[in-house]
Length: 163
Image 1 (tube, rainbow, N blue to C red):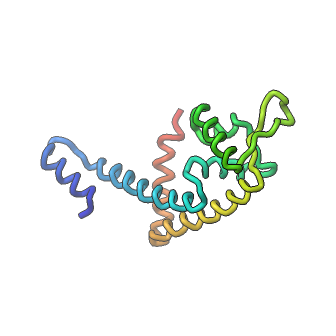
Image 2: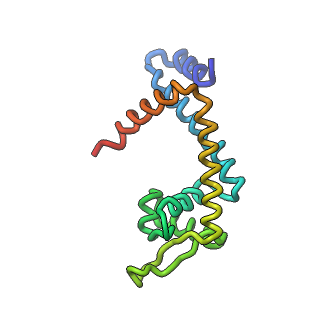
Image 3: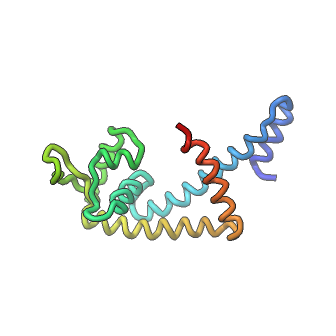
């Protein structure tokens, strides 16, 4: 019996009129997400980053040469508010990991680009991040890895494929 089972048992005792069985799935997903996030955050911290700064460096790195995007493109890939994006960019500029460059296609705008140090940090942290994810993924037996991937993909599609 795990912590979620105990919570479900308490609800069943207190509110037998409610079917709280879905709570078990959502409780376990929440707890699992928390555990996985803490493990990945440790990887980012070893590189002097946090999840949001990693996300921005990763978005720039995977964009390919010249490893630069407009703030609008960054905003679309990261799904945060423009104020939040500006603050994140400012912090990474201060850290010397990104810089603002004039946009050669539009003199009225700027691009956010990885610096040499930002590129090197992105390379190192992405390699460690992938290793962390592989270690966490390997906690499941191989036959369950594919099953879980299919189940989660199908469940996510219920939310992301609707209008």
